[in-house]
Length: 73
Image 1: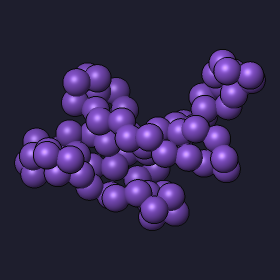
Image 2: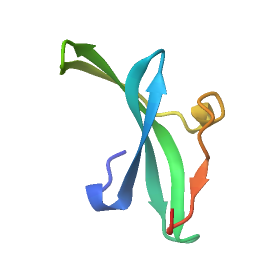
Image 3: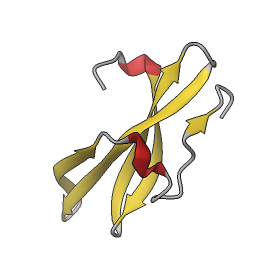
Image 4: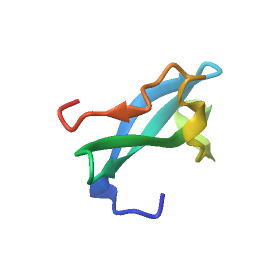
């Protein structure tokens, strides 16, 4: 997302039975966090072998993730 890590909120998710994280970027106008995309982790044993990023704000509904988080969430 090319932003500072402290302005990003990560939320655990799953995709095709694989661990994933949803990324939300701080929205200074609203004081919350806007959905940015999803990162899916491919696993080999107990290690991450690859990370596939989907920087697409339209996929939040597909994964039943909120498109926006309040600053208190």
